[in-house]
Amino acid sequence: MGLCPAASRFTRKAKYLLLLALCLCVLAWISTLSDGVLKEAELVPTPPPPPPANDGGRKDAVLEALKELDSTETEPEQTNTEEEEEQEEKEKEEKVIEEVQPPKASCPEKSPLLRGAVKLLFESSLTLAQVQEQNGEVIKGQYEPADCTARQSVAILIPHRNREKHLLYLLYHLHPFLQRQQLHYAIYVIHQAGEAKFNRAKLLNVGYLEALKDFNWDCFIFHDVDLVPENDQNLYRCEDQPKHLVVGRNSTGYRVQLQGMKIIRPPAKIGRYTMVFHKRDSGNEVNKDRMRLLGRATKMWKKDGLNSCTYQTLTVERPLLYINVTVDIGKPHSAL
Ligand SMILES: *[C@@H]1O[C@H](CO)[C@@H](O)[C@H](O)[C@H]1NC(C)=O
Ligand SMILES: *[C@@H]1O[C@H](CO)[C@@H](O)[C@H](O)[C@H]1NC(C)=O
View 1 (cartoon, rainbow, N blue to C red):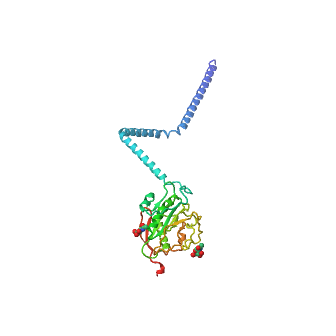
View 2: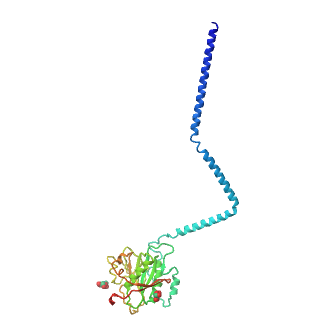
View 3: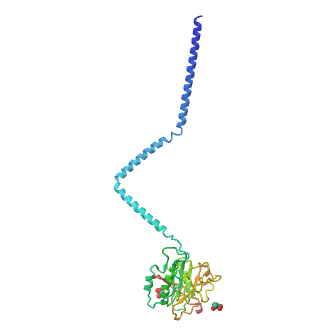
């Protein structure tokens, strides 16, 4: 029995060792397992990017290589295209400047060019060529300020027949006068053809309709050919209400046009006109009502002669300083 206890002690030790070894094995296995899990967890988000990144990198590299090849092959051409590009850019800039320039600042409420009352001269030697020379910025009867946007676009309507000299003096004074007021304007001479009695009212109707074909004017000014304004503070523009520019004269006629409209008169000192020498010719009757101004208004004409205004435009000529609308207005109703 001497052997038995020794053997039993040995087997117990061996059992402990085995158990220890097993424990170590289990620990080792657990550790590898958890490592694997972690690695997997780490890999999950990253795997997708690498392959495309690699591919893309390769493509980029290829593209770059191609570009380099291109650039080395076409170096002289490239300098050309750069020049062209510069030119194009310059052109673009110029275009931008061109596009930016038109919205000029609005002209000031009160023009700095006004001179007030001036003494008018009527030189008998005055010629149309001289007046044209002095008004180089007027194109086909129209003008607008170069350095600012006019506050109003105004059509001046002048009924006319056989008064060439009057017209010359009026153009001579009126163009600089209107330019000092910084207006966008056009001067329409409405020329009555034929020998029928001069019908001022109808000519104005016609002028109004003809002028609207050119531009959507803010304001219409009916002007007599033989009256020249003396004071440029007498502003040829419309307020909300029509303004009667001639003072010291009684207003008759055109009652329908002005119906319900308050007439604003400039102060007497400013609203002065000089009448060009006057020798009445047959057909041109005395006009009590020298000049009138109408607001931005088609409505004013609604009930009046415009609808019944039958006329025939014979010619529209556009010399430098005015628009010459020649009309046949037919015979007056009284002739019927
Ligand atoms: C103005 O004309 C109207 C109509 O012809 C007349 O009734 C009025 O008395 C005149 N007024 C003046 C100040 O001449
Ligand atoms: C307007 O044109 C007509 C027709 O050509 C012409 O007879 C007339 O003299 C012209 N008037 C003016 C002021 O230019």
